[in-house]
Length: 180
Image (cartoon, rainbow, N blue to C red; front, side, top):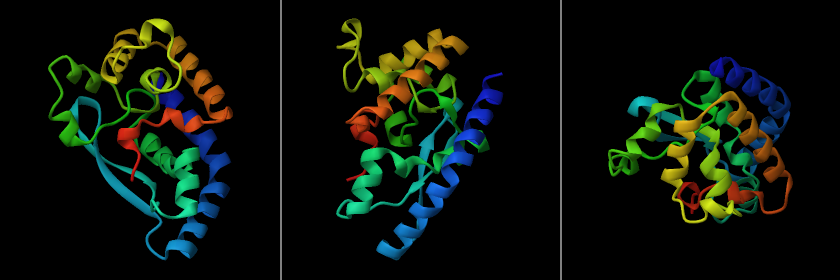
C-alpha cells in the first residue's frame, strides 16, 4: 500500500513539476553550459546502493544557490521514487561511506526505503518538539522505522508542506547533504 501511495504522490508531483523542471533544466544549461543532472551514490533499503538524481548546481552561481535554498535541486528525485529506489517518506539516504560507519543499531535505518522527507528532517533541524531537542538524526530515523504507519506518513507529509511554505524552508535539508 505504501508503494502505491508513493507512486501516486510522485505522479501528481511530477505532473505539477514537469514544466518547472524543464525551465530549470533550460536555465542551468544556458548559465552553466554543462550537464543539467548529476548522479550521486546513496545507500537505500537493505544496504542496496543506487544513484540519486538532482539538478547540478555550482556553489558560486546565483541560480544554484536559489535552487539549493528552495530544495528545487532535488526535483529529479521524483524519478528515484518512481523507480522504487526511494519512497516519499523515510530516512534520508546517506553516502555509502557514512553507512559504513553506522553502528549495529543505526543499520536499522536501512530496513525501509529512504525518503524525500522524513521525521528526522522535520525535527532535527529547525524547531524540534521539547523531547526531541537532543536526539540525533539517526535516533529520529530509528524512531520513524519503529513507529511507521500510514497515519504517521500523512502527518509527516502535512508537516513537510507546512514547513516548505514558511520562510527558511531549507532547514529541512540537512547540512551534510547540501553541496558546497
